[in-house]
Length: 452
Length: 104
Image (cartoon, rainbow over all chains, first blue to last red; front, side, top):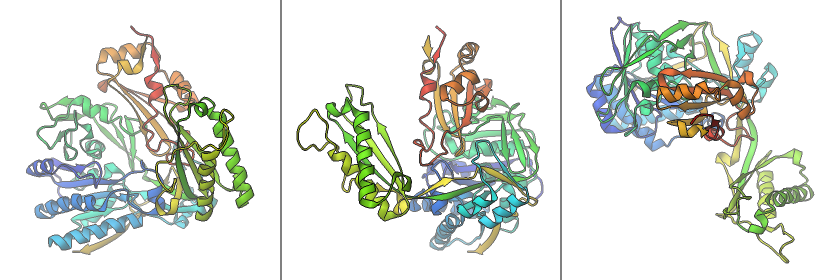
């Protein structure tokens, strides 16, 4: 803990690492002398794949550009640069990926600083320990998950709080690349270190983690600022052509959460039920009345399991004679394909998963083309290829009685007509929406430091 | 009778984590916010029925400072599950948009 500060200035470079924040806004932000530069780098919004595969969603070039600007400014000014939820999922390989980029930046730009790496992934065995000790609890909407399910986990990570960042900074890290962390904790950490562990620090984090999405009109993306004090905070976008208003800030507290007034964070509850938002200037908002209640320390765990290999095919149908009997025709396609797969590949519908999604309304006479997405998951890639080919190729030639002779009735936009998603179609599902109780806020974190 | 979207500044849906869905309705002014709420059309029971979830799983939060209402409820399928068809949960606001509100 450092000597207490009356006011701490926080800069969120953007809502998501790798989104190419506006550089002009960043220059304006630096003129305000922020005490830290932060950026969130993760989300579960793009689904379970990134945790399962341990791969990032964002482009390496753009991440390097964003990180390069942040690190250069941070090192030059001697202020911390904090990144949470590295590489989308914040699991170990995602952290390694981002640490590699930081090393490359340091080398190329001739920068010297201490890099702190925090890993938050835990093994299924570790999770089993928490479950066995009764330190594992479901959140609303959580799927059933028991000790015996741990073996089926592909990967699992805890979502750390601000203490991990504080510990790394206290150990001299100027740049911190953290595994999965709550978005808010990135911004609550520096105030916490300066004795401002209060509702305003966390409330500021809640707004900052979405960058400039809380502004009246997001003319340029990136660079939102907050000033946190004992009794209030102020918020303002860095770019002078942009503004925050009480309504824009209040409205943003709704975004992407289940409850806009009570927001659980590791070890505390952020309470905005009595927050008051006033316009300080025509582009700056002051917030008072926010509270923070300390709670027993628990962190969220995120985990995924492997489901199989996915293939999909998109088929367009335009013939009005088919469209008027579309449902029956599609059922025949599916049934015929399933029979072929059974007879040819020896696989019954229970051996794979299949669904179709129909885009466009076949019943509307103005519809010129309806899209069918065939989507399957199989146990191995060879089966997946065979199954999807059977579906689209069957759909191509299923005849209707209104015509006589051979018919080809599905338009495919490319060759081959089927697609696989990344990594041979490896598909995962989220299987945890739980918290675990911790005795020490950083007991699931692994720290490592590099003097670059 | 008006559709809810005709009375709102913004209606949106989005994941609140992979297992919960949230719906936000932002009204432009306090008058409209109060007028619409007074009809009772945005009750937990009504919206639960609209989205086919049990009423006790539909949470309603009123945000008068922002002239806004938020609904949250468990997703039918978690985000990115095999049967999910909307990863970000961001195209689930249509039923709410089209909801008929008994106002002039």
